[in-house]
Image 1 (cartoon, one colour):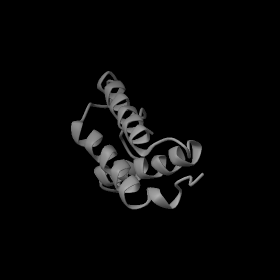
Image 2 (cartoon, rainbow, N blue to C red; image 1 turned 90 degrees about the vertical axis):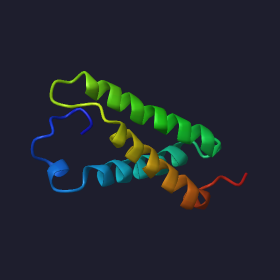
Image 3 (cartoon, rainbow, N blue to C red; image 1 turned 135 degrees about the horizontal axis):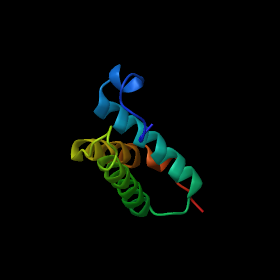
Image 4 (tube, one colour; image 1 turned 90 degrees about the horizontal axis):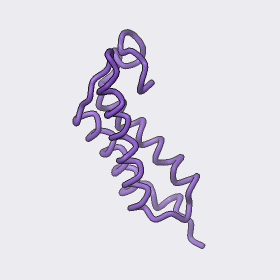
Length: 93
């Protein structure tokens, strides 16, 4: 979805920033499940970097654009997950 044209689709039916935050919230869950022994700060930094790279790629697509607000929404979704929910899946070994 990150590199598809914006016309139609789910983007026009919902708040774009809420979709960014929700998407990265879900990606945070999968990242923690994939790397249960990795410290939260490493996962947070990696996911924030991933979101930034997506925005950079979009800057070079003729039908998309770079947005720091989209990236901020990505980081917000990551932070909400790790601050409020990340401890539920934390590996205790």
